[in-house]
Image (cartoon, rainbow, N blue to C red; front, side):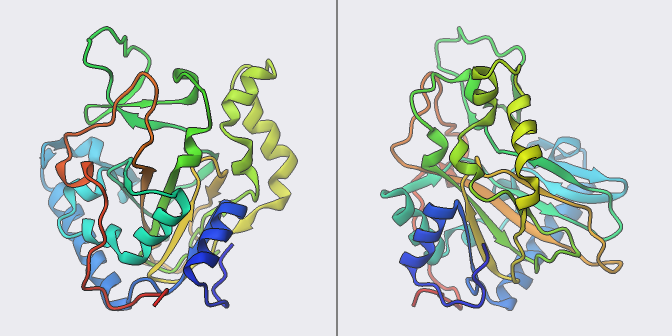
Length: 299
């Protein structure tokens, strides 16, 4: 999954992504750029931790904690000043546009995960099978039972008129701010699982009542799991239906394993019955590459 010993061309990266469902491109950001990103993250968490509401968002909803440790920051690129430009590195945009075959837009505002040594944060096997959307303007949509966060609705495949696998037109971009190692809880994936589509739909079709499809798949394939180790400043691209998990960090005290992840969609993608949020001006427009970065792995 991580071809760190191989120099990837742009087409190599896209081919691996489309055939394996995940690829890591090393050398996208320099150590100095990742040090800058960490400074932005630390400042955002420090400022948010001192107040009840930060940039219009309740702090207890914005920050996820494991004990006394902040390990999750929601709505990353809306609250972390200076962070958004990193998601617009030319190499990232080129991979996305070539893989999806058209211009791209944000499908999420981004989330920062930090596996802090000594914390107990652990994530079980799952697919990211939801879209962050708004209901139609007609006011007739009953949102009872939906997960709503920061004014937006998280809809799952069972809530959508499922005409095609909409997740094949979306890609998750994960900027590996710190090295991702087995000791510090690197992401694990089940190769090929993204080809199954949303497993909750398969479970319904099989009469298993919902989660059984995922549980059965994991039971049959967990022995195939691969550790997605990655270097500082690398970028991992993967499809939302890729089954993935991560374990607690057993790294030395004080070590961090930060990653900034956001979801991108093909510009033409529409979800039947729902609309894309437009209350985040910086992310509602077509993603265009920014200049001024030190490295370009495809130069």
